[in-house]
Amino acid sequence: MISSKMIKLAQNNSVIRAMFEEGNRLAAEFGRENVFDFSLGNPNFPPPEAVKRAVIDVLTDTPPTEIHGYMSNAGFPEVRGAIASSLNAKHGTAFTAGNIIMAVGAAGALNVALKTLLNPDDEVIALAPYFVEYGNYVGNYDGKLVVVPANPPSFQPSADALAAAITPKTKAVIINTPNNPTGVIYSEASLKALAAALEAKQKEYGTSIYLISDEPYRELAYDGAVVPWVSNFYKNTLVCYSWSKSLSLPGERIGYIAVPGEIDEFELIFEAASIATRVLGFVNAPSLLQLAVARCLEEKTDLEGYDANRRALYDGLTARGFECVFPQGAFYMWVKAPDGDDKAFAAAAKKYNILFVPGTSFACPGYVRIAYCVAKATIENSMDGFAKLAKEYGL
Ligand code: PLP
Image 1 (spheres, rainbow, N blue to C red):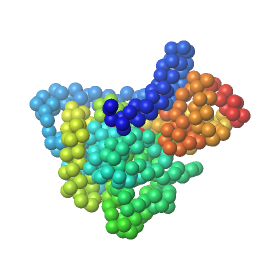
Image 2 (cartoon, helix red, strand yellow; image 1 turned 90 degrees about the vertical axis):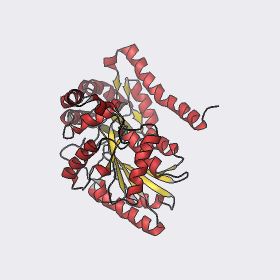
Image 3 (cartoon, protein in one colour; image 1 turned 90 degrees about the horizontal axis):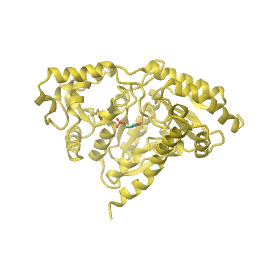
Image 4 (cartoon, protein in one colour; image 1 turned 45 degrees about the vertical axis):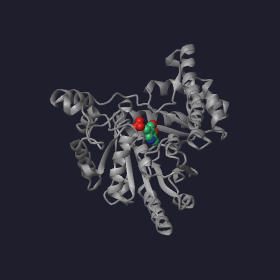
């Protein structure tokens, strides 16, 4: 018999697979252009041209043994130094290469952070709605995921609700801003309130509670919105970043963890996280991509393109009577199920070849997530279907 944990995962996985297969079935029946698949967070814009140039340049101007060889588990020192300098210029931090560990995407970064911090039965808090993989990642290290209920209609985090969920066993809190699935950017006031709650609980219990800030959407912020740098408010923060969305490189698996020098037990955490990278089997983040992204730190994805999609979808849906959270960042629209039943809403949309994800998948029933990292035509051509869906709900 294989791992009982994995048997459970394999059974649950079939729900996601069913959605994927449903998209393929609909595409085969009606043609790909007549299927409006808003279910996946896969960037539709190609990486900036500079990424391709950087990869080619690295391959031409760096000795192959340097590019492709083993290195320290934390990654190339010069790459980590360049990232530190870029962060310092943007956020007023004081990082050096010694604060940055290269990671295999945000997923790798989160796993390294959790592997570093957790003992069995330690509690990790996530704020609903949250990226569903957090539960699996915490389970990898036999931690216990504790969910703080959502805080509609703003979906800003509630410091009081967080404080109520903290126990002496709380080792970490995961936040994600800009947020998947709501598109909300946690405000400076919200983060300060979270920090105050965490400080108070650390004092009350005599523990260290680490804030893991999952930030793959950091660069996707609209209308000049600022995404506050979390460790400026709370020193026990680990920032998990990736270029999956910001440079449209999800398949390349490249990101980093920033560990501020002020964090409790800094030396131990940094050393343990470097070792975690190795013993989890990553060994180090992909070497060619490390060298390439270091040359693209100020490059941007097509933010205007996402913004145009955001406005087209928001305007289209609200004009048809749907209630949406206006997203400030990321590329997701969080839409209220008209009668509160998110699963029935997603099932009804399928009749019009529209696919999106029920909020239940993010521990927040009553809403659905519509990913607008798609071709603009997909949004425009879906509007007839959304109009019929609205009519069905009497909007
Ligand atoms: N965290 C959140 C909130 C995400 O939405 C995703 C991917 O969609 C990840 C982490 C994983 O990102 P990566 O591809 O960089 O591992």
